[in-house]
Length: 207
Image 1 (tube, helix red, strand yellow):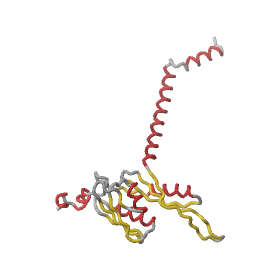
Image 2 (image 1 turned 45 degrees about the horizontal axis):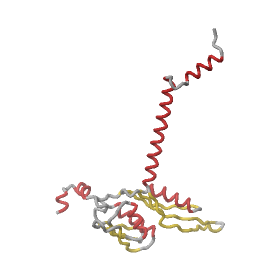
Image 3 (image 1 turned 120 degrees about the vertical axis):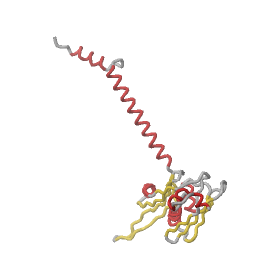
Image 4 (image 1 turned 90 degrees about the vertical axis):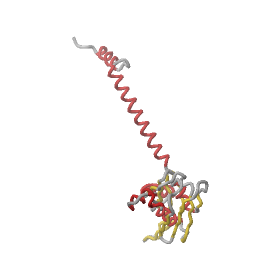
């Protein structure tokens, strides 16, 4: 005999009962997928939350075109995680929010890894130059703090450096000074890496 429609409905309901094995497996798989998605979202949020961004300068700029002048905004943004990674980016857009967003993405593309000492300072003295801007960065004793000004201070703070002396020599332009500081930080080397590159021991390097 063929099963009646009511009997088929009852059997389909019984298949979806929590006590049934296939239904339990499906629910467990769904719960596991949800947990994985939540973990992945939380990891992405942690990665995004590690990065900090500070706007150094916002200027209204113009470009002369055939019909007249086209106005836009330029934003200089410094991005860093305070753990030895920092970048400087520039963004241009018709509005301020769009310029800052472009500056952040540009800064994350041009990251520099800074070697930090246990005292949250830099290992050696370093000089950087960009255009007419010269920047001198020198290590300092614990408790000194960040002695710097302008965009150089922003770069050093977002890099995670707590004790440092910096001096601006030359141009006062924020963008050139920030880029000069990035050049100085990119040239830093630890004593171990320097001895490895030169093929000598640390004792010979210190002597």
